[in-house]
Image 1 (cartoon, rainbow over the protein chains, first blue to last red):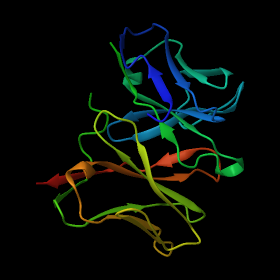
Image 2 (tube, rainbow over the protein chains, first blue to last red; image 1 turned 180 degrees about the horizontal axis):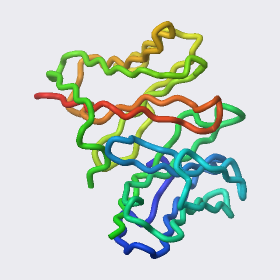
Image 3 (cartoon, helix red, strand yellow; image 1 turned 90 degrees about the vertical axis):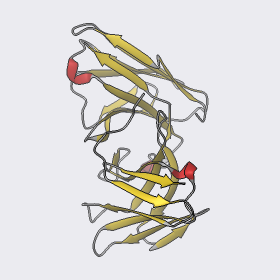
Image 4 (cartoon, one colour; image 1 turned 90 degrees about the horizontal axis):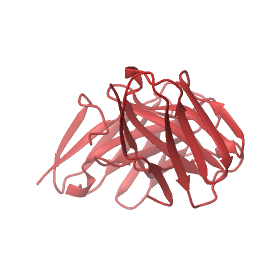
Length: 116
Length: 112
């Protein structure tokens, strides 16, 4: 998917365990995003990054943290997974400049996370 | 696996007919809109965008119309094909920021 991959594609975990999802891009794009997708809610932004070590919160950031130590990698961590975090997680990237950084996001294929 | 909701508005069209998918937005200050297509098991894919200084923009078999008076956006697909079956989302930047806000989506089913 346009030089962006997510791992793992599927994960089942237990409540209270930490979980890290990885997003890797090969396009040298500056902006990266984590969304979750749930029935009835569509796609909601969790966190985003506008550069190495530069991140900010989205709409639904509680219970999640992110890190971006390299341009190509954007990690999403659930410190202590809860059942409400069962969802499909999508990573996205965009080359963007200035205020139009969100143009034409390129999405990964998603990670199906189940928290039991 | 299933990546979208089970209770989305659904538009069913005959193959070869034209499709019109609608989207209402709430922020009258929004100046940029995007349509995405999401096929089952895949991430959303950019289709077409439009800026608020335009009323219409055409791509290959797709046209986006913007009516700022009633804050309405539509995506028209000409000669709909089976490969067009997907969920379609409109999106707009939140507060002119880096954050893209998506609508809840419309499922398009194409009947052979």
